Image 1: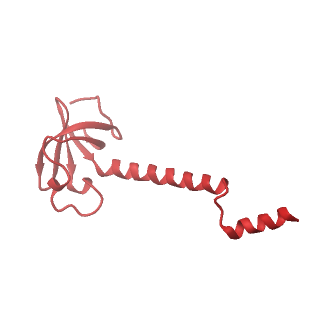
Image 2: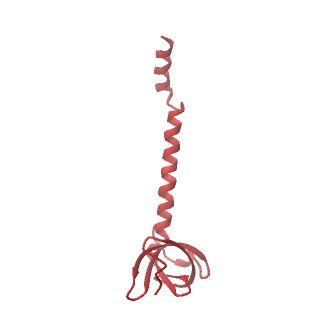
Amino acid sequence: MSKEFEVGDTVNGVVTGIQPYGAFIELSDNVQGLVHISEITNGYVKDIQEHIKEGDKVKVKILEIDKTNNKYALSLRALQEEEESITKNEENTIHDKEGEHGFNTLKDKLKEWIKQSE
């Protein structure tokens, strides 16, 4: 068993096999893990091969490690969720900055202009 990986790590791997219940990912020469069908992507997955194929290089997150049996539970979906969260935070930051730079509604600006003209 390898001690090079820990729960929560994001690692690169290669899809070595696909079954109806998930995809096997080789992380290193002696470490292979499983991405369960529920961890492929958000929503319902009817056919895993619509999302990934054998031989694909993928980035996965390690969810669990069973050291006794040398089994690794992996996820593609967890990384997608993290990326979506980062994107939403960036969008919120942009909108906040726009408000600071004068992109307020006309109603709000009108009040300011009236005060300034007095």
